[in-house]
Amino acid sequence: MIGLLLGLSGCVSPIADKAPMAPETAVAPPSTPRFGPFGVDLAAMDASVRPQDDFYRWVNGRWLARFEIPADRSNYGLFTQLSDQAEQDVRAILEDPATRAGARKLADLYGSFMAIGAIEAEGSAPIRPMLTRIDALADKAMLAAMLAETVHDGGTAPVNFYIAPNLSDPESYRVYFTQSGLGLPDRDYYLREEPRFVAIRAAYVAYIVDLLRMVGVADAPAQAQAVLALETDMAKAFWSRAERRDRVKTYNPFDHAAFTDAFAGFDWTGYFAETGIAGEAEYVVLEPSALQAIVQQLQDRPLADWQAYLRFHAVDDMAPYLSQAFVDRHFAFHGTVLSGTPENEPRWKRGVAFVNNAMGEAVGQLYVARHFPPAAKAAMEGLVGNLIAAFRERIAALDWMSASTKAEALAKLAKLRTKIGYPAKWRDYDRLSVHPSDLVGNVRRAARFEHERWVARLGTPVDHDEWFMTPQTVNAYYSPEGNEIVFPAAILQPPFFDPAADGAVNYGAIGAVIGHEISHGFDDQGRRSDGDGRLRDWWQPADERAFAAKAAALGAQYAAYEPLPGMHLNAKLTMGENIADLAGLSVAYHAYRLSLAGGSAPVIDGYDGDQRFFMGW
Image (cartoon, rainbow, N blue to C red; front, side, top):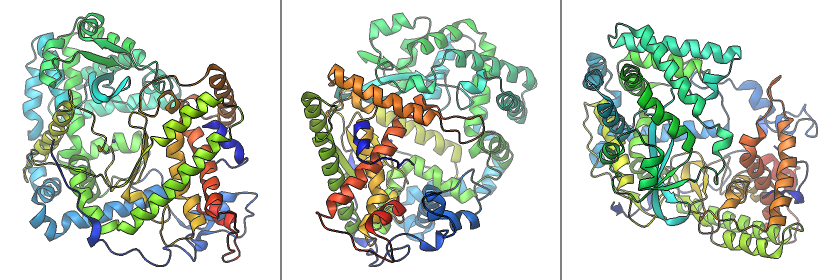
């Protein structure tokens, strides 16, 4: 919440369940910090820089000078460093003979990805049946059925949906239709005329041509142009990323009759049946005008254009799981052209990512047992409690917010759910079929398993124990529908969090992350939901106006930043993160000061508590 920023100025910077495996087998936490004498790597500092001139370089300058970005990365930082370590930890689990004995499905899934000889021998054979079916499409009814099957299999399609809690009734699930189906990252890649975007579109067409030729398509250039033209027309109707942030404008419920009337011209009966969502009384459409445009294109464009589209995306979706020629061409476009990464990751890393995506909680159960001791969870719970207490104080002290809005804000904070380390219930993968010699089949079966797992939720109460990140993910999130903050075990590692480190450092590092996630509940979009996760306006008009004015001022500040010549931040797009970054740091500092209980922090190696806090940050 922007008002929380005022106390510190000038500091900017995602069935049956089994009981969780207790982590008693994890190694005990060390008694000394991983980095330096108090939790900061002093060897990384650059003493030639004055902190008041460039604080970041003062703390990290020597590390920046000696570290080179790996060829398989487009950027590198502490998040990436911890992700690399988590990948190594998961690799050790998957390649451990004990895993093959005790978790055969995981070992077989990983083995199917690492069976390079068998994959090379098959070439494009695993996707030939799908391509044959696309070739056999004879009318638009068959097209609708194919689109539905593609969604069921986790593929790229222009008519797509997900299932999540209903914003107006967070204890029930709803089907949310959302714009989908572009091969490039965003609508702007199709519509902007700067040289960079023109070059990317040319590279995209060349990529489509190459993939289609690799599966024997004779008129690949013509089909590639048809795909680009079709997706460009789709992009023209798509909402911008900034528009899609608006939780009110994107919540558009339709009952069944109103939905099929508003988006008439598509075989919804067949689509609903194939995807498993037939019989729903209500659907939510995030971008109604975009869905209307897609349905119109499905009617107007020749079937051959849609066949070209499906043909290309069938190959593109599965290219990372085919023979090396497909893998290399896929990476050359998606990795190098789009992301600027010179080299692909080693195959084992891609195998780890595949298994994490398909059976993430099964991996997480083993990961937690090895790498997240109970003491770390207890220490983190204490930190979170202190951050919430500081947040409560800051809300109470706001001089621009009315008593009624404060009461609502405090009630929301009191209902905040906290999830730390790993879920209370583990996901059951018994119904997922894995074959050690069928990689593409495993990809599809895993996607179908996940799709059907979510469809099965319809008509049931919302499961508040659900996690949307695995324990081995280096990240954290706030869910407005659940009013919950979630911190997976992998982010709770040094230097973000070290139970043996000085408290000031932990407050500056993981404390700022905790504060960031709490703040999302009160940022420009999070504030639109109440403590139960319901989309509801609980703000007095005058308070809303005051908030908007403060947000506008912060937005103007961020819009003035120019990280590269001529390239300014899109403050409308980044507003939620801007608020959470600044508020998170502010509340973390407040919590740190509260932790001292009126006393003074010791001086360690010449640095006082406040200095160590910001060094940790």
